[in-house]
Length: 458
Image 1: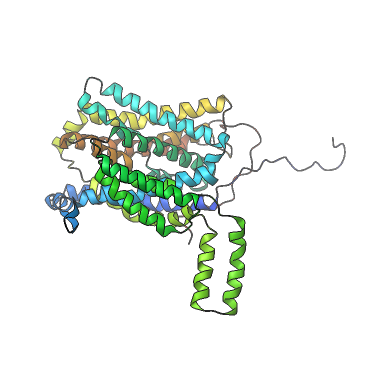
Image 2 (image 1 turned 135 degrees about the vertical axis):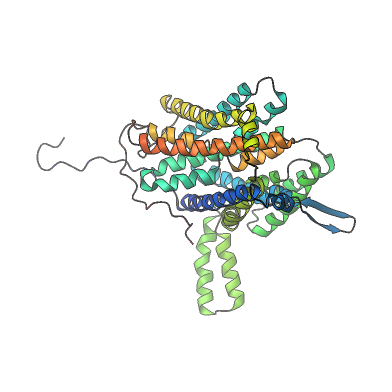
């Protein structure tokens, strides 16, 4: 105990900051939200303009290829939804794999709160949807529509708050969205697959086995996995299972483990040889050595994520968000139980499910939310998690064949996502710093990191 002299420095507990790779991921998602929003507005404007017939005609245009007697032909909307979106789901799989291998999903206490929050955010919205649609089996089977959070829009809105939004809240919601995506993808594979063709499915299984062997052999090049992924997509497409699941499998199977240390230590030696003799051959060898020192999943995600964020997802929004919003359509939609069920499930279901489950996890001591995260932040973030745009529209297209039901589901998704964005932002701004800390005790100083940029660092 100190009896004389000046008092010692205050005790501070350092809260781990978000890793550069996660910050780059969040930055790309934030920029993607702006492009996706622009594409959605364009789709709605186009579908409700005097040229609305050209919107439908464009996405119904057939395109394909043939090699002898074998070929594949889809309309442009299905090329976007089935083929291009496989890239989006591959990025989701890569992020899940990376977080489980070297990120936040490794630590039980760190992942417990967002994982249980995600579980509440999956089950409570589905329960609300089923209660509202009870007695209507033709629309009740669309419960998967309300299961997912749109990461791009969520991160984009959080970016607008800058330092007022704690970094740990961003990480909590990103981890929650990842666990949420696992649930939505599982539901899509199990409950929204019609007929299955055994031959192509066996071929898909063989390709997966080949990729597992490549992992076991520590193949670090991206190209073999990319080629296997293309073959896997065609096999899954032919099997009757939705082809985008091939993207998820590729993302999960590409190695995300850190290579052996000697690989990284060898890079300077190759670089020194290049300095001694700047030949094309030594440049190529040095480049290969540098690539071998970085996890294959990280390199593939760096290549795919910008394409997914700035091309694939906005293109998906453009192809699927074009809904007629005339008075008759809106009147019929807002009188339907399907639209009401989607809105209530997205807004109230996520708010109650995520906040309740995460609070229970904290109170039971299963985990914590350090770093200035308060219950006001948690509640606002939980409501924002009701923005269920991309995967919700995706599952709606799988769940509903009837054009009227599909339109009602889409109107519910757009309305519910908009309401969740507005209410969540207001709650985050108004209640953010007013309620107690989620994890009381010594808290580290506020993060000195700058506000989230709109672009990922080069």
